[in-house]
Image (cartoon, rainbow, N blue to C red):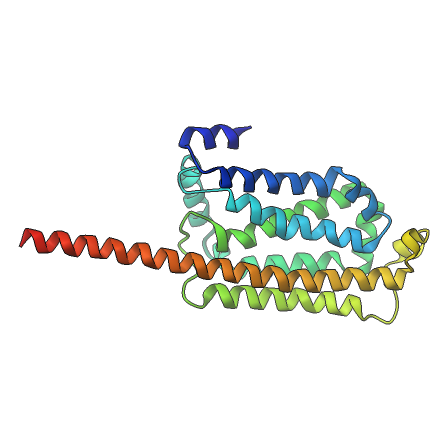
Length: 245
């Protein structure tokens, strides 16, 4: 595996490796484990599959990266960002993330993804892309030209998670099941389509809130650590200048 080889070359921490491998394991769990089969039977398991691809797997994979690990790709990523121009703005990542979630939960499109393998693959790819792009602006070890500073990460996450959380609340409290595909399924685990949809909606809304809280706490701690390192760097420079005088 390319990542493991690079990790060994740069002698990165074991925590980085474990995070990356855990992220890849979640991708496999979402796509080639019983989760994938259960997602065809139960709406709430399909929701779990989406959230693994959209949030949890990208988060862990990005936490497994460092500037040194990504150094062979840094120039290419910088050129890609410049070529993208306005499309490389964090606001675009918010729009993509929210749009993908709402788009694939339109009943006709949701049912089509479950009934047609090509549409299902496309759905998974768009979730993975949207999640990777969204979390890149928060967790990437490479400084972006559009780096979020100050209250930027808070506004970035609150705007996104509220918009997606509203979708989850809407699904949870809808008076009737809205997806024909699950209406036609057997009553797995004794859940009616209405109850199954409500559970799935609550999972979405709850996951968005929990992930936002944990991510903001992590970003706050990271910002404090970066501030302390910057302060120590300035003090070293000042001490050096004083000695020269």
